[in-house]
Length: 280
Image (tube, rainbow, N blue to C red):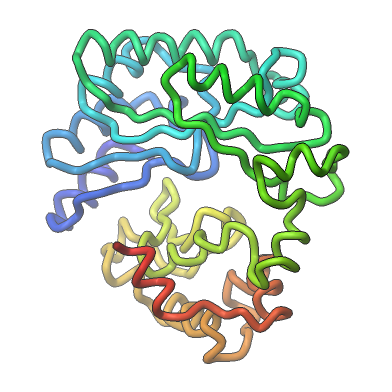
């Protein structure tokens, strides 16, 4: 995303107070990131990276900017407590380098006497890393990070072996178990983004949610304006479709998402109370 596109969206929509900056891709590969973070700070906008970063390649100037300009929250995807285990899923990644970057962030937080960014260690549990859950949790505490575990949503990739041990941390061992137990899709919250946090791609295309990377809703926030583009006919139809009020339609991106098919199968459509509670 170019700084000028970010600036234009912010300037034309002065009521914006919070922006989730991450989605598919690594935000630290954007050479204009420091300008983006600094401009958001000047405009009083809170930036977050809840969707996650891998934190492998981060210039020191970027790390300083995160702290100096009070980037609010950063979720770090770290699926292993040893380099060997970590790189099985984060192919090409370097755990030692990631931890050094986290230490650098903490160094600047101490220097600037700031709690930001709040750091989260997100650990996706697989069969090949489940034995390191506890070790990863201890490492997270040592690095002043919030620690969370996440279920692997791909049933055929490295499934859990020791279910009881894993369930102590995740409650269930698979996406399918979650659906059967709670009668709703895992990570259902991403669907609420169509109402509360509509996702915009780096080039302005409206994606709707963080799960979608292949399709868009046929409008562009940079050329058509933010409010108009996130409330066009397709996205309005999608919202009603996810609530079970309208039938599936071929040109709606949600039709290609497993979460929609899971809620359709279990008749667990989204209700308005969920959306309102998520927006609190």
